[in-house]
Image (cartoon, rainbow, N blue to C red; front, side, top):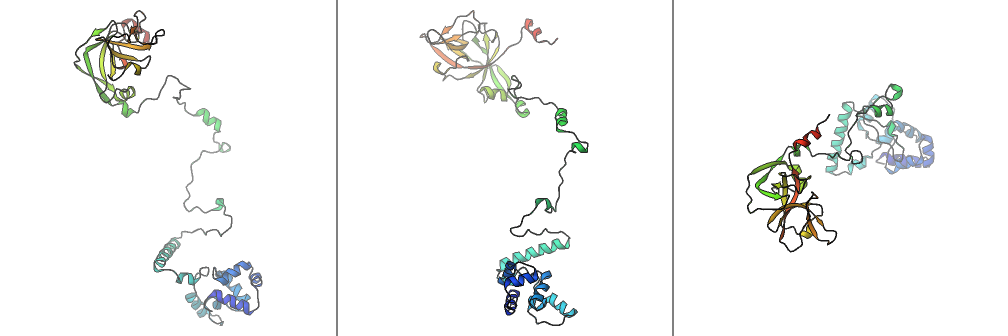
Length: 341
């Protein structure tokens, strides 16, 4: 009989006891006795005396296989020095481990011993199949979360906190229809130069002939704005309007930001858009629409005093690009309209 498990089973059978009877004598379940005998577990040191008494032997014999003898201080010291210290872990399981597994086990034991030496308590794992209350679980690193005092402790109610919350401007379309979120400050601070073609005049009247495009300088636009209208990356050009046919939207002398695109055809135009058009050799700026009667494209002025210009009547027509922005100085008679009283 080499193990504590075999010794318990042999002594129980020699006494003619069943597992249930031995379990009753030591106040455990018969399944616990079964685990003692098949090597899955072993009696805890505190229960070993009761098991030995029930089997008519000594705890020393069950633990190490020594014969019963009067106990004295020397025998107790010998028992402590030679007995397998982990009664719930069969020694055979340790002997079967590979060298690599033994190295890992040694490291785990060293870590556990270090924790014991510094006084760090390790919570015992709950037994299999038992319920474990999270409220009673040990927290070795408690981190209390700050919280406001409850109303009955002098704190504020939810309604009070809502009323005292600072007002915030909502940019939702359903709240403020004419306010939109701007670009990030980093984007607002970057500018891009757009070539200025000061010698080019797009007629906002009867039409002007232009045969040269001379760049005279640059105008700086915010890059985020150019990107939003498709004029970034050097695609935009600034020209100037001449005439009053597009008033009040486009004034005489207004600067126009044009995105050149000579591949546009009449069929690709968007009704209501403003375009730079070469009409029979004349450069004009007009909005485009389809005539209600003929269903054909016409160039239309914002000023109702000017008639439509048919674009599909056989005259040479070339779309130069789309006008995406117009800027002009306010007239003296208009400036006062924007002064707050």
